[in-house]
Length: 268
Image (cartoon, rainbow, N blue to C red; front, top):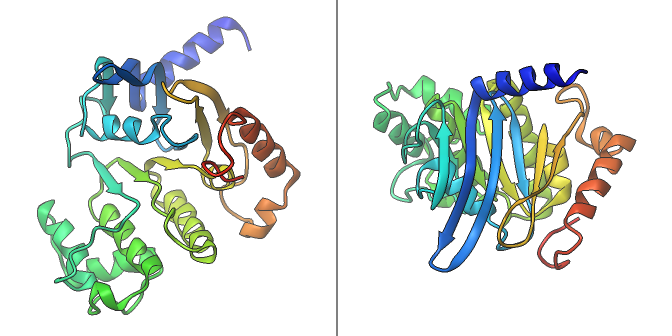
């Protein structure tokens, strides 16, 4: 590929970008948490941010969501400055469901706030997309932690926002539930075509979920590695995918990029 072709491709990706961070730096008082850095995320990409605790992953997610503004530089999401609560579905480490509402009621409330019809059929369809059939009438405390996190994802999918932002949503779950939800999210993201940004400490999770992985340096968070994940998005069982030599190679490369971490902070 010629240099002209690369430049044309870069311009095209920026013109159609779902997210664009330009010369972004963010400080908390005298402490620089992130940057400076530049990052362009094309539409439909599943970007995973990985790195040790305190490297700025969650800060970047808050900047993209509009919950914080950069100290320097500009952030654009879906074509303009991000607005909190609009333009992006959000899933956090804790489900943050309303316990006085039923499972279906939590999803219906998200539809209502978005000005969309909260019909029983629509609620059931959204719950079905995350593998929760026939639980709409249950209370949130009557279902498991993994099921509660599925409800949070269904709620985020309720509004057809172009972006889905997830901040370590599976970190507090047991290993088996975590793997099941990874499979669910991979399937849902492939079928929805949404642009996703996912924060994790886990290298394995990053390779399994992402179509692209960005590794951040210890504070201040800068880009240490920007790696496309050229693995099949559909057609392989999870064990088959993880058994591919390419999976192991990508996992090793990303792991090397975070080699300065504490073993207790980033899981291999």
